[in-house]
Length: 259
Image 1: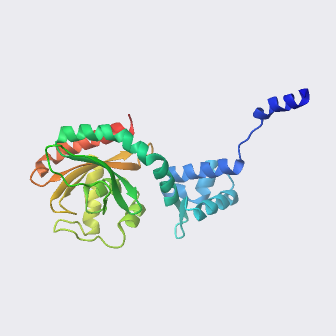
Image 2: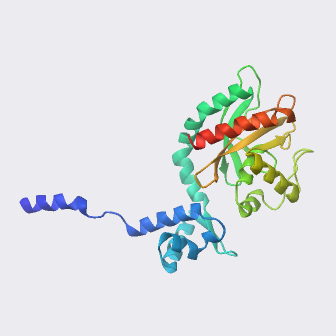
Image 3: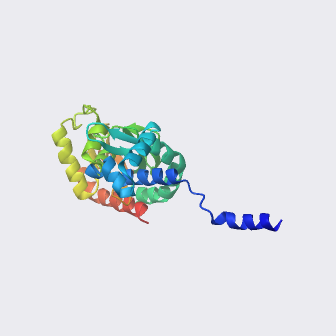
């Protein structure tokens, strides 16, 4: 009896961690943080203190599960949609709960609809919104919007890697209204302006009646987690209001990202 009790007492001191799982998680985190040449197998292995062969086997397994995606031309890895699905299942509700009070405040400040969107595949999907009670407003919650034709999409693209921008916007920039940007050069210039001021703008580029501004909620590495938007009709959300509304959106997004 005493021997058994002694065995029970020493068991918690033994390591119950699985080394391969530790390594896989470390590599996932390294891929999430890395960009450019830092995202090759060699660089990722070095960042995690692993030899290249071990890192390659683990990354290949993660790729098979959709956790990472490999670019065969460049040899670089990026986070796969499998991680997004997991994060969405675990954290989307928490994100909405955390952001909703801020959306209410932004709505009161701006007098327009405040909305929250997250990336879903190659499109942005609105997951929450607050509209002024005295104003009839379009309902965006549950809708997906194209990235190049909305302030929401521009706020996402402006803070994404160039290769990601190409992947997310696809081979052609579709025209929705007469103000939609369909030129790659013009889109790049617009994304530069968006990055400089910290918010994107839209002048009826997806729906001619919907004008707005949007700012990204960034993680610790500067990548967008979600987008906060302020929307309204062209007769209320005008060019003259863009700067003030943009500052409201930018400050609110920053306060959610870094409370």
